[in-house]
Figure (cartoon, rainbow, N blue to C red):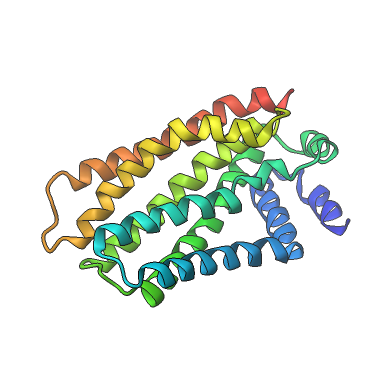
Length: 230
């Protein structure tokens, strides 16, 4: 494959490793367009079904539905990042890149992918289910921050589950206790965007959410090298 030749040509430069790995993931995503369009179809059809069954829901229901859809979109878009890598391809990457470079490239690529999905979800929600948001840009920022957090968590879980035989079951078992607190925190933060007055303590919750994201990145950098050598 010509991307492997390009990959090898750029690997000797340490500063280009992460960028080259991201380009590799981007090229694979472009070639497998059915994956991207399948997620878009899932997103549009889910929201359309909600529209047909509920019409234009009230603000609290609107907010809850948004994060439920975001969760399933993230599972479909991000969780496959390591599960689709074959053992032979992982051995090849092991010979040309470091563990830190590889996991960082996955985290950055999946964050970018989930940012696109989050903005598209918000657009479709506003078009089909009306716009009950009082502070639109605050909610948009929360959706971007939430999309980043979800993508980081499921990328980390995907890296662990890829080494197990029961990959899907392990993702569900590990993901439930980790993602529920984050979703509850996102729900509380985003609820303030529907209120005429911004409630106190919002920045503390945002700082806590950012801290959780940083913790996931740090854990990924610490633990992934052990998985990488397996």
